[in-house]
Amino acid sequence: SNIENNGHPNLRAVSKTPTNQSHRKTPQGLRSQPELMNSLRLAARHLKPTQPIPTHRPTISIKAKTKTMSTFTIPNSNLNVNSIPDLSQDDLLSFPAFKIWITTLQQSLARQEHPSHEFHSDPYILRKIDIQSVDRFGGGRLGFIKLKAEVSNGQGETLPGSVFLRGGSVGMLLILQPDDIPSPSENDKRAILTIQPRIPAGSLSFPEIPAGMLDDSGTFAGGAAKEIQEETGLRVEQGDLIDMTSLALQAAQEPGYGERLQSAVYPSPGGSDEFIPLFLCQKAMPRKDIEELQGKLTGLRESGEKITLKVVPLTDLWKEGLRDGKTLAAWALYQGLKQEGLL
Image (tube, rainbow, N blue to C red; front, top):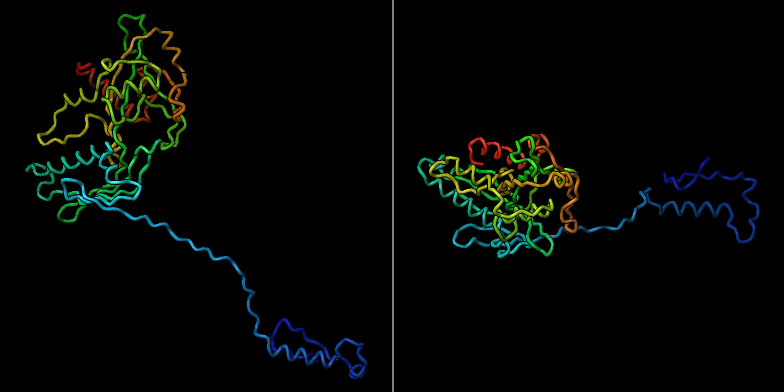
C-alpha cells in the first residue's frame, strides 16, 4: 500500500519494498529504506498546506503634485480671485485680455440697475473667479488663460461662466483689382485667402481671410496693416483701411442701456472673449502681380507660420471661405455696407 502524505502534493506516495529486500545491505554513505521513510514522515509533519508562491513586485508610490492656490481681491472691488501658482496677481491684472473682459462684464452687470433691464428684479452678480490654467508664448509672455467665473442671482440661478481668455484679433478683407480697368466691376475683383494649418480645427489647410492676434501696442488699424504685410507680403497704409465693424455699428440702433462691447465681431461668445474688428482694404495692382500671388508661400516661418495664398473671385468668397466665421462676417459686412451706400 502507499504511504499517506498528509494531503501535501509535494510528497509523493512511496511504495513499500518487498520484505525480502528490506534487510539488504545499503551501500556506504546511503540511507536504508526504513531510515528514508522515517525522514519523510518527520518532514511531512512540519509542512504547511500548499500556499501560492509569493510574487515580489516593487511597490510604486505615486503622489500627485498638489499646487497651492493663491487668493487675492481685485482692487476697488470685493471680487475674489483664486489663482494657480503659474499666474501672479500682477500678471493677471496687467493682461490686456483680462482687463478688457472684466471691465466689460462689470459694466454689463451694472446695467441691470436700469428698470427696463430683463434681470432688474433679481440681478446677477459676479461672485468669484477661479483661474484654471495658463499658456505662455515665447519669452514667457502670457498668451491664454482658462478661467471659471461664478455668476449667480439671489435665487441661486447661475449663468455659464467657463471662459477661454485670449483677447482681440483683427481680420482683413483684402480686395485686389486690376489697374488696367478704369471702373472694375465686382466680377473683376479678387479676394485673398490664406491657407494654413489650424490644429484646433483639426485642419492642415484651413482657408480664411488674413487675420492675426493684437499685441499690447498700436491701434486696430495698425495691427491689421502689419498682419497684411506678414501674411501676404503686401504693404498697405493704415489710412487705406476701412473699419467695417465700426461703420456697421454706427448704422445699428441699440437700446439706451446697450452694452459697451468692442466694435468687433465675437466669433465664439459661448466660450471665448475673442473679438475681431474686420477691416476692408481695396488695392489696385498690375494684373500680372495679382496672378503671381496665387500659391505664394508667406508668413513668419521662423514663428511656425506656414501660409499659402489663394486668390479667388470676390463673388466666390462666401463659398471658398464658408467654414471660417470671420470670412463670412467680412463678406456680409461688405455686402451690407455697399447696399446701405456706406462703401
